[in-house]
Image (tube, rainbow, N blue to C red; front, side, top):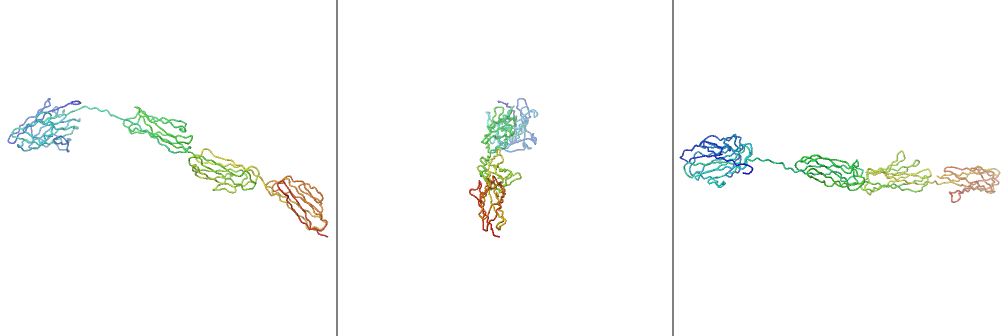
Length: 540
């Protein structure tokens, strides 16, 4: 038979019908593979630890069984195949039948086949040759091998030490000697096997689906041998899209995974950075010997960025000492939340902060700080500061804003031109008053700049009434007398808080309620300022 060989031998057992003596046949064994044994009343030759299964007449296993049953009125036979010797044989064939049976009355008997080798035996079959006077129950279940009165029972495959027992029932149809013969054959094959493997690669990419432009983008590539057998010379590579590089500026990476056993995985991690915002597709490929290839599912990372825009508004002109209000507005024009937004306003020396909205606080350097917190895309925040300054000139202040992951610092400068306002106060007083005719009195004229800017080209003109006569004067500028009118030379400039004092001495000539009139003009006055002092001249 192909891929094996058939070995057969014969075990012959004879019985007598009732009233006859049993026929005893001595056991023989030969190289021809055929032997005949006599019946006897001994015990079963199968050891207690033998592996056995039972089968019906078709050789189908039914349950675990005990060794072959042999009682005192039974005779048994056994045959070692193919040599007749246990030490050099592979198969043991045994049977046990009654020593005497009654004609036309059913009797039970067993056939047992055991693999006594250390190898697996294939296609084990037991053949039974019976005389015409013996009928086997369920004999129709046997299969004929082309010989008359021959039944075959298939034991199939027997592992080393495994047994199968066929329990049968027969009926002798007439008295006399009745014999039956058993033979067995099997296929012992030499088999070799090659392990068929199918390595396969699977690669995956893990990383952020959304990130800030300032973030380090952490990616992990995992390659796995998802098949059987080894995947050899495994390489993992990724080409980064434009706009993303590794931290050290590389645009592509190749990792050597070496050899991967079945089910084994290796991870490769790298950090990348984005130079601009956008959606980036991260792709990775794994390759190995034997044309193994796997492409990872594309991982898309949306890189976003907050962009802060800043404006500051205030008056172009203001007066010294006037409260000046500035509005500072920050807007997030990016597509990501700006976190920990802080607004600063730097003020020059001499500026006094009168008020700051939203809990703005000034430090020792004059810088005001507002903690805005987080600012969503398209969101706006406005703060206000109110200041005063005591000096003329340009008041320049710079506002700036910072936030996490904001590229640079947005800043804006605003300048306000400060000018003063002159406020000239004219005061006139006389002493003494009243004045006796013939005596003198002095009129004191004071010009005071109460404003915040210098008064320029200030001019004083004093007018006397008839009862008085000009005697003399002192003051900031020289006088010019023309009859009853005294004109003083112009004061070119009078600084804020400065004062110019004039003293005019007159003589009382006659009794009367007289008036001393002073008129003042300047570049800043649109019309003259006039002051009149009343004096009582009385007689001796």
